Length: 136
Image 1: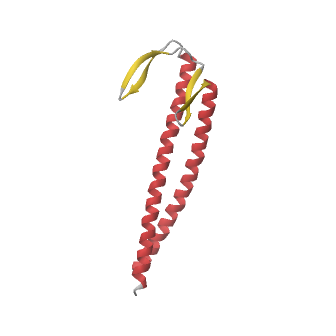
Image 2 (image 1 turned 120 degrees about the vertical axis):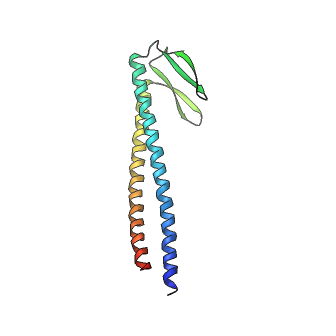
Image 3 (image 1 turned 180 degrees about the horizontal axis):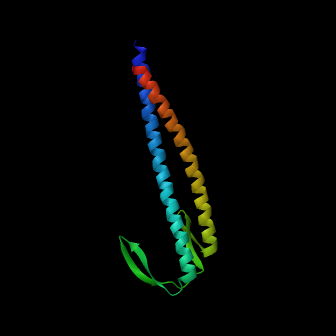
């Protein structure tokens, strides 16, 4: 009889751990989705600037919700961050290609996380059923 509650405690502990893992994966997927959306917006903006941006006046964020007006003078090049506070100049087409590669990598990561999340959810369902059986 003493083993039954101990087994149930172990199942509940594993369930808590799995619920935590599932929540962490959901948050990672949400972050990836937001990043992909942000990168897609960058591509749309680059397309617009390249096709119709010459001499346009734009608002440039300077922080804390403040902006300055600026004129677009170069529609063929962009300065892009490459990590570690390092930036490089690239053509708009090269920048779009790199951004699309980032999106593809993130989509693969998101797919992998979704598969792992489904495995965790299947294990959770399995343990919930087992816990029900143990407590009856």
